[in-house]
View 1 (cartoon, helix red, strand yellow):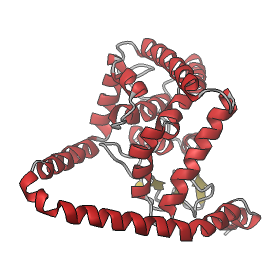
View 2 (cartoon, rainbow, N blue to C red):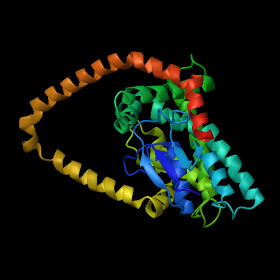
View 3 (cartoon, rainbow, N blue to C red):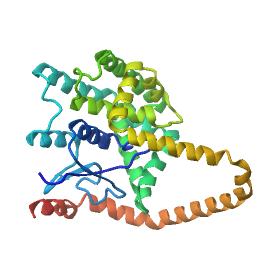
View 4 (spheres, helix red, strand yellow):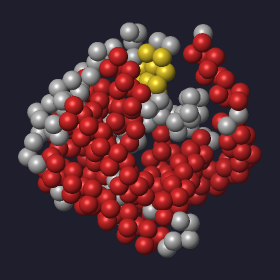
Length: 313
């Protein structure tokens, strides 16, 4: 086994990554205790699927959680060796249940809710990307989430009704999840499994991200044992991220309370903000043609062949 590398979306708000799929893999790696070189990517374009995470071990390139779990299992690294056949079947069933009932609500919160998208999601992903990709990828991911919602509930259904239905289903799912966890440390005893990594990756962003429309987040925070579950894993495995976020928040708070120092620069800051917005929109207009080229290239045979040839070398 060569030195494992893992490319991910960067973190915010005390999270090791802002991305659900990246957080699954990161958490699983922490549970195993396997050394890995983590790199925060600023451009997922040159990845096999135009998305993150990407795990590399020599010539082996993996792009999703299930692939990573199976590959590491083949190398005799697994958190699931203590599960019996019934528990493994239950974990698999619960994983699909989360995908069916919680994932749509998760995507709705992050990408479909326009207030959350405008204030939180798009800025967070844009911050992690370089120009012009910070215009392209957030819009691409939002469209994918909206298309999923349309496929599940129909394009002409009232969005408020969809939101109500999605959140009702998610709340039932969370109740079932809470009942299954009970007062245990993990879902299958006192040792973590791959299922615990999945649940943590769903819940931690909902708890830690400061969404303006926080219907789902507030519900998760109100479930005591699930909140403790997230807190325990965060403390054991990602404490440095939480500590750094607290420090940065304190620094920001100190700056914001210095009103007298800020006041003379208010007009200048507004002018600079306006100038930046103008430049950004101009850049977006110039890049629009390139975005179409990028979309075409991502779906071309040449793009797929690039990664197939890399694996053959």
